[in-house]
Image 1 (tube, one colour):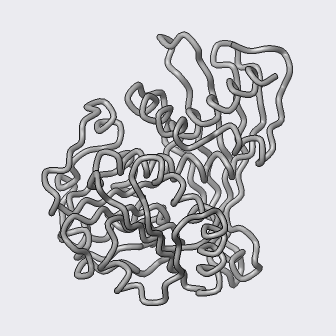
Image 2 (cartoon, rainbow, N blue to C red; image 1 turned 180 degrees about the horizontal axis):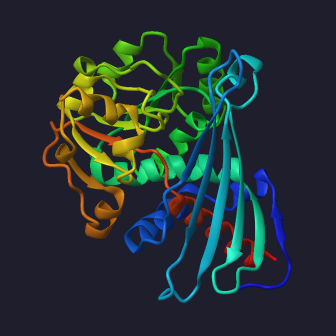
Length: 323
């Protein structure tokens, strides 16, 4: 499984070793299999006149019955005020260890692990929830994670048209232009409502604290993917969107950490029992769960260390093979 050399894998190498088709397949197996995922450490850091920052510590390890065992931990900082500085708001590092001996094996670019496993997990969920013919994708946001959404979804659905909306229209145009340069049909849009009403899939990756997606905009058959919000104060969709949808989550932590669920549950719009299944449960069944082409489905993720460990393990083993 291992050798004695500690590998340091930068962002470029980490990304190259996580192609979305293989990563989605790897995550499908990992969610079905499961691993030990302690409750993440979540610390709020006051940051003067700027929004509070967040420190996350996310460990996970394989159980003893697994033949190849790893242990990993991701350290994440989230500074929303960085948006005004023109630098990323999220920074992370991933450390991978031998699950049998505790010896350190690799230091990986945590930002790349986070971004790629996040959108790959959303694509995996969509493989169970979105219509098979879903071809029009609306991406809300134009940051690092949002920029990966089209490629992840193209690994599971026949996406032909990509619309991009961002609070900064110039950022949306830059992302759309980069996709067009790769031969994809991509358009920056300024009318979010019109774009949402036409979309088969609406995927949001923002740090919004007020809803961007209105339930009244969603046409029958839409799949809604909420990636960005990870605290009870953050929202990407309004109560009506949640009320109209069949709701799925990545892990049960979403019920306590995601404002898109915490707030409507607290207001009595839905109950916790309205959540149909977790991603683990979807992968263990491994069958589509959409009941009709008119059903609106919604997937809310807050991220899990299971996905980080699966991605980091995939990178490390591929690096060993590549030498």
